Image 1 (cartoon, rainbow, N blue to C red):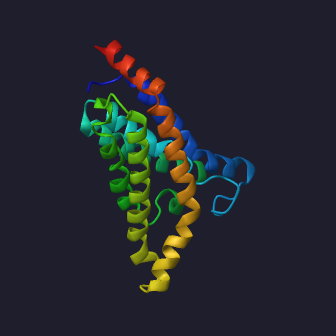
Image 2: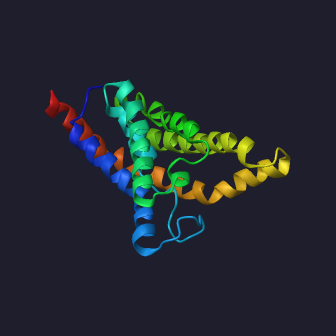
Length: 196
């Protein structure tokens, strides 16, 4: 496993940041209601998880693969704050848990680049597992500070998160299918060869 050209990851992370900040730009420019999770915007639909997993698979530095999602999330929160001026949107409750959980996505990519056969099904399975793990753990972290400590509060916590779960899983699988497709893997491998 060797390092692909940085251009590939710069483009992937720039697109990812744009996807996360875009609704806030719409809020500022067109009055889009970002406070409504049931709006027509597909909240959670982003290449973030797939790109982080792709970095885990194809970056030779595991530390860099884990650091990039954390840096990207910090950049996203900074941009949201600059665009909206809303501290509570940029620094939401449980932000530190999110940093830790987003750093786990590259771990799901470790070892995938070495798979010559059936790379895509393995990547899709890991992407689904990572998305489910994030959903369970992030909401478990939100529960104590945001909901009553009852079964009803616990249930409400997960029910309120469901509108974000579907788009997150769909986008993770869609972008994983593109990034880990034979063409995506070939591009990553050719970047590796060109950088040697």
